[in-house]
Length: 179
Image 1 (spheres, helix red, strand yellow):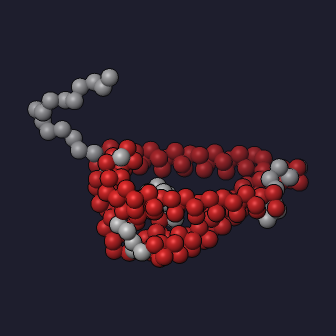
Image 2: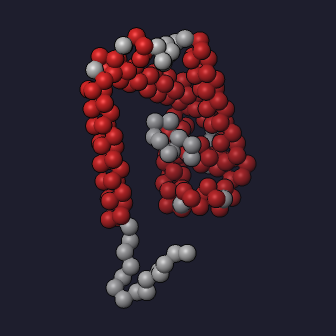
Image 3: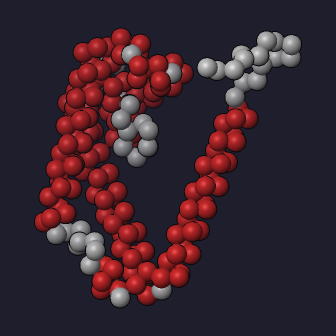
């Protein structure tokens, strides 16, 4: 059964898989250049946009302080932090960090983050499929444990965020129903 299960996912180094991976890496690099130049062109006006309002002033100030302190190294580091990966480059453009340094940092980020993510994800998929080929029951149990662990993690984060949220003072009017 193992050969049938693993046949569903091609070898990660096969041209049919490797070419889209390389194109995706080039696309991510190109997107990072667009992010920088949009931030550079619009400047602080981008913070008043829908994206800026969604991110919020506090997070924007934190990102600006981080980029101001670390420069292009912050751009490289943002590849490894979900949620920051596609927002920090705008800030780098607004702050007008050195474009040659930005270019190198974003290229290095793409060249290191993409393969680690791609081959790491493939390793997990191949490992789980091999397990499913040997013991479907065990593979199902592993999947269930992972799903439960993710649910517990998300629930705890939401509970912690709710605890940190400001509560109205006693006697203050409630915001009322939304509608």
